[in-house]
Every structure is written in structure tokens, then in C-alpha cells.
Image (cartoon, rainbow, N blue to C red; front, side, top):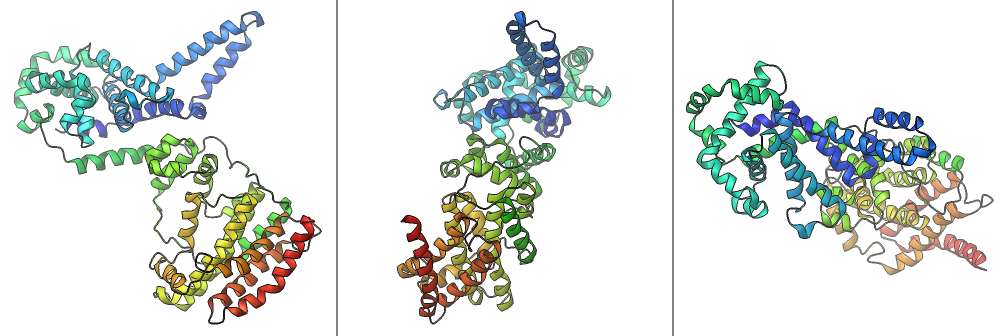
Length: 527
């Protein structure tokens, strides 16, 4: 029998993950104390109301201690699979973060996790009356499942070496027998295997131990001795399934119910923004939705990404996306809000209107307008990226100007790679992931990266005009949703299309009057 497979299939073992996870949340993500049952908080409040003011400080300390002890008792493992499960999960976390090396313990949270491992070890020893064989076996097997060779296991956890040697000589019998007793309790008694039930069955069946051990096949004996070669691919799939089950069961409605307000310099009122949002939502939401780089649509994976936003913690982001990702984050709170509320929202304009969020209404409305070109590209060709390239190029040039304006207004940081890549995923040709579009722009020297004149004579006036429409006073004729939409859609596309045509000079001629007017406005403001 593959004992570890049984361990992972056990419902109690899966449940213990939640207890360990709650500890990790409190250690690494302080906001998560909202996970603690409200009854605890009520109990504290009731207790406090009975205190006299004179004894309030002392009794508050008593309540805090009782509260802490009550929580610790709640998550303390009490059954066979609880004990092994907590140890297995905790050693996995410590190993993954390199906390077996004291040089990697950088903060209080790291120290708390190391302490958690020591407590998990102590719980295991206590359950088995100080016998260390099961503790060491569980640590070794967990790391072995991660593909870590024996020499590295011993290097990272040297205190298990002598016990593992004893297991391979004789103690393997206790490993096999312990799992057998736990199975007997759960199958025959239909109850979880607590220490008392474990000890009772152990004593009751002692005379059958030798008979049981003799009946074991060689493969099971070697499994208990930690001498079999694991199918790491199969083990990884089993762990993945356990992880999926946990993610599915984790509540999403934690923390705030809407994203934090973005600080910007926009002068529009809420009614102006709503008018813009409702118009764009009505007229521009029918165009094809692009997922050029095959961003996940798996429900579990999407939920895990939303959970990353809930946790809002660098260590958690590192565990999911790597250190380079974290180092490139410009604004942790903005990215976390984006993950929690926005990245998979199918109606972000509607959500922003509901939340009365001016900045996000404008953001999602503006980036939706250029997507009209997707339908035009589809009408030209459904399977030839070369024919579609000019239209995707126009859309991308249009979007670059919009993003620049949004950056200037303070709505987004255009250096935020998370949002940058999310945007690109929606405007690159999915047929070839945008390769022909890039080739088209390079070969024709189109865009600010290749054409300095375009940058100064086309991008700058368009940027200035759109920017001004959001920061001007209400009296300005540009302070108008309908005019702004017409400008971003028809005028932008007209100018950029002419610029990308065989007669780019026509674009420069058409932009001149606008450039002169907006420059005059800016001169008057500066004077």
C-alpha cells in the first residue's frame, strides 16, 4: 500500500491544510484575522463589558491570552492524519522558503514559520509518545516527493539522519503498523484516529503485529523503509489535486468589497464618467474578445490569482510568479486590487459604475474604444495575420497614446508590467501572437519607436488634447464625454490610418489645426 497516497486522500489531512494555512495567513498577512470565527470576537467583547475600568487593562491582557490559546487549540492537530498532515505541510513551506538555513530567516514572519515547524514536530512526538520515527519518516517522504535527493535532505534536516537509518533496519515495522492501526480505527470504528483510539487499538492488536508484518509484500516493506523509487510525476499530480480542492474551498469574499480609490488629477464629475462608461459599454462591447497569449481561463487558476490579490503580500507573489515579478511591481496595492477585482472581470465598466469609481470607469472605457479595429481586422481576414497586421498596428498605436494619457492622469503606471501585459494580451493578433504586427511596424518604420517626427507632430498633440479633456474645467468644450469619444475613436483612427497609408503627409496636414489649437490653450494656461 502507498501510505502517502492514502494520506493525501484522507479528508482530515486535507482539512488540516486549512489550519496551517490560517496560521500562515496570520503570520504573513495580518489582515486575515477576519478568518477567525466571529464568536471569538463576540466572546471577547462580552467579557470586556463585564470588566470594571480599574481592571480593564489587566483583564484585556487576560482575554488576549485566552483568545490566543483558544485559536491555537482550534488549529492544534488532534488526530493521526492531522498530526502528520500539519508536519508535512509545514516542512514543505519551510523547505520551499529555504528557512532550514538560518541565513534565510530575514524577518519575524520567517521566524514564526520556523517555530511552527518545531511545534508540528513536537505535536508529532507527543502523539507517538516521544518516538521520533514517524516524525522523521514524514519529513523525509515529503521532501522526497519534491524530488530532493537524500544527500540534500540530510544536509537540510540533519537531525533526522540517525532515525532514518533505524527505520531502514527495524523501525520500518512501526511505520507500517502505525498506518495499519490508523486505518483500522477509521474503517472499523468509523471515527477519526485520535491518540486515545490509536493507543487502544495498538494495545488491543499487539499480538497480531507479527502476523501482519509477515503478510506485507516486499514493495510495501520497502515503502515503509523509504527505499522505493517514487513516481514523482504521479505524486505531483496528487498534490496538485489536493491544492485544487483547497483553492476551490477557500472563500473569496474576504477583505474589502471593492478596490481602493485611485488618486488622479481628473476633474470630471461622477455623472460625466458614468455617461462615458454607459455609452462605451453600449456601443463598444460587442467586438471580439482577444486572448492572444492564452491567459488562463481555468476557474481554479483564476481563483488562485484573485487570492493573490486578497493576500497582497510579496512573499505570496514570489511563491506564485517568482522574484523577478515582485521586483518589477510599481505599486503593490494597485496590483493586488487589479488581481482581486479587475483582471477577470467580464464587465469592468459596469463594475466601476456600480462602485462609483470615476478613474476606473474612464480607464476601462478608454481602453475599450480601440478594440473596434479587431472587428475590422476580422472582416478583412480570419486566418491571415499578414493581411490583419495593418489594422492591429493602428489599434496598438492608438492604445499607446491612450495609455500615455492614463499614465499622466495618474490612473495607471505604464511601467506596471502586470497591467501592461494584460493590455497587450487584448490587442495582439492571436493568430501569431502579434508577430506580423511587430514586423509591419518595424519594416515600415511606424510608431514613436522608429519615427521621431510622428512622436512630436502626431502623438504629442493627440496626447495633449485627450489629457486636457480630463483636466479642463466644466466650461471647456473638451470637457464632454461625446466629444471625447468622437476624438479618441474617429479622429485618432483617421490620423493614424493616414499615417500608416502610402501618403503619411496627409496625416501631418490633418493634425496641424488641432496641434495649433491645443498648443495655444497650453500657452494660455502657462501664462
